[in-house]
Length: 162
Image (cartoon, rainbow, N blue to C red; front, side):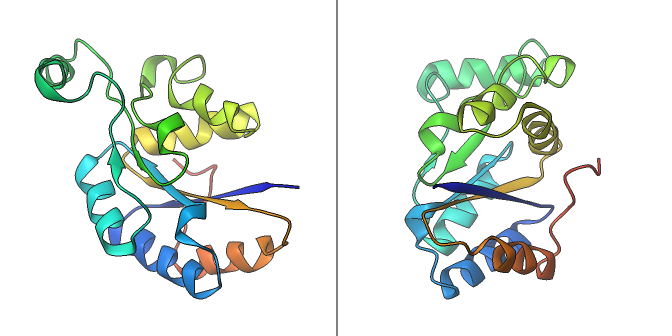
């Protein structure tokens, strides 16, 4: 049975150190994804940890990306998520619309990964607040307690705190 474990981090350094500690536990980089609102944060984590290249989603690059960035800056469109790792293709480019976070965007993408609805909405709210989600995909081995302890050691933010 596959298990997803998600940690929430408020700073690039904490997320990067947690990922390195996960790798020291034997978790392969190809099982670790990150998602947040800030592209530079994902770029830096990806570069420091080797989890994969940053993805921004369809329509967020080139001239369309520039136009979209301007419309986001003007408040005409919601921000979108940026991701790296194996889940990036499902999570990158998802809207982070704080006004309707329960019904669309990143919350729905997380639900598609099997995250319960209420938790997915909470994680999407954290990403919209520029916190960094570190997502671990575990196979058959049960390392969840070790991983949760490791996240706590690296100052993970509780899901219910905003």
